[in-house]
Length: 247
Image 1 (cartoon, rainbow, N blue to C red):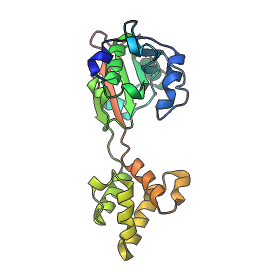
Image 2: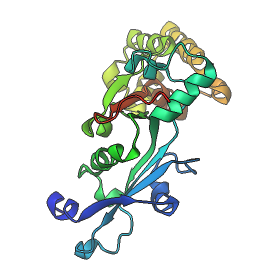
Image 3: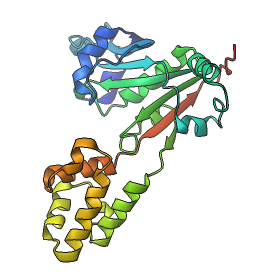
Image 4: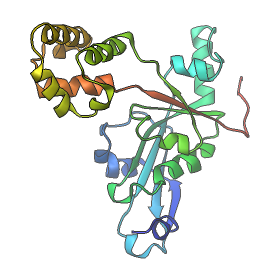
């Protein structure tokens, strides 16, 4: 499937909750997106030929912003900080919209359609600022490709401590993408090293409720590595045609 033969016959249109529901199962958070402000869909044009049976190829959902985000303060040079609560909330709601979901039907991934959907719809929101947060932003930076600027969350102290502990017992960063290989390394540890890393893992898990008493094994290792590598990326886009709305 050639990229040009697919993308040239697609158009971005105003969508609905129905469009989101068609693709929701392909998103890692497949529940209801909550109250939304606008939905846009990527659909085949009438000249799309063999793709005409696909009703919705991509969808993007915009919502109101989350009230308090530290990375937003950094990205906006504290533009919304230092205000009383009601004024702050009113200013944020008036000026910002948040990208809540971007989903592309699996057969059409790898063609740059997620970035295109973001790039084409941000100016349609009619606000000075569009923002988004992606847990896997460092792996798939499609929001950056759409013109947004990325701000990466700092690694937490507990994550840094566990990474250092892994390194001390010979488990280097390049192995952390493979739970199976990490588990094999852990299984080979003996004596003081085994007790040391078990203590460090248990300390790390204290922040995760029911997981804090997880038994050692591959499932626990998968969970630990998923949290160890999860560094949310905050994205922001300033509309060059709109200034901050203060009233």
